[in-house]
Image 1 (spheres, rainbow, N blue to C red):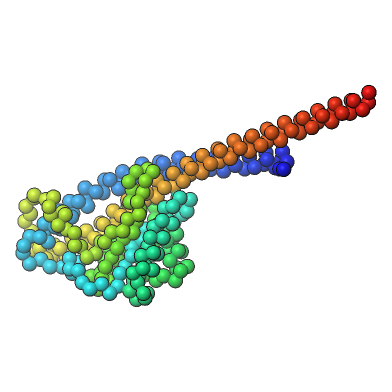
Image 2: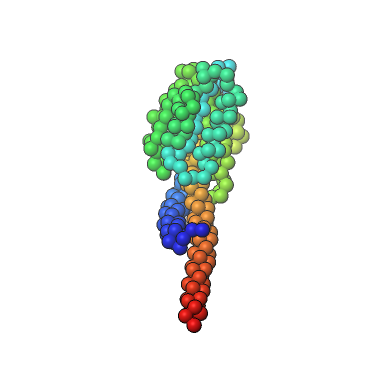
Length: 287
């Protein structure tokens, strides 16, 4: 049985841990509010850009672009968004497990796929398993701007334009609520779902100089914006997952402190009872 000193030491240690997890929970809750606002604020811009691009692509005139055409898939790129730090529950493990399972099921050779990863956890995971990582970025801020990821998104889209890859799929945690996030796989390239934007639009546009030149500018920007939107969504999920994980850790620490306090009181009561018994026995012996 543990001594009173050992139990007291564990109580003190657990109380300190609880203070840390409680502080981390509050920090994550604060970051979540800003990240959720960023993700929601980006949606109108993305939808309007999709509307304009869809209007041009479906105008009926000859406006062609390689990003709009599906081709035989010889090589797939997976854009995987993870975090730089742990202590976020199943945020990283669930998405990495989904990507790894997809790679194992769909591909027989490393020539058939590559990975583009955002986040130190994802990068270390893939490199440890010998999975080819074409591009990577780490150290993104908690509230990223488009400038923070612009180079990576531009290079990723250029891979498709140059036909180095034939398909681009992004894996990220979609933010539903503070307690619910969903692993999502979304095909970004080729852009074959623009009709959704066209159906929403009733606006008429005039194009200068012509549709093809406008598409050459807008389509890469649109694809890059989709990646950035997924990053914002994923960041909100990260902060929500970390907040939930730290809240659970805090609650567990409280339960452990209660159990240890009960053990401490019982052990202390037993020690006092033992001392009283010894005193009474000693007095009886003197009589």
